[in-house]
Image 1 (tube, rainbow, N blue to C red):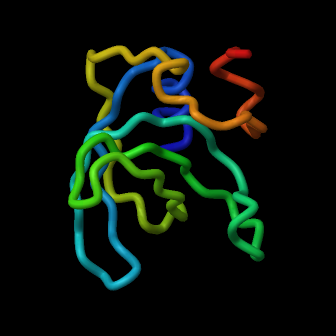
Image 2 (cartoon, rainbow, N blue to C red):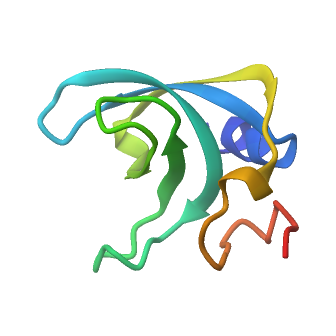
Amino acid sequence: MNSIFLKSINDRLIVNLTFRTVKGGVIRRRCIPYNLGPHKRFKDKSQRYHLLVLKGPENSHPVFLLPKQILKIEITDVHFNPISYKAWKPNWFSNNLWNVA
């Protein structure tokens, strides 16, 4: 799963993601992948998939998912421009894969 996710970041391709929520529901969303690693919001420092959900009940919003929550990642053929979505100062774990200033 990591290799598919990292490929989607490297190739700047949107993914269709199917994942399990904390409450056990299953959700499918179209997302921008942007990082793989721990997130400062969580104390446990577990590796997480960092994505931006493009359209959902809350419009666009970030999600930080544990590997056990990911059910399926499908790479689409739709490219994205990171600069169009990056609204924060990046501190990438994935070797600065977007290579944006």
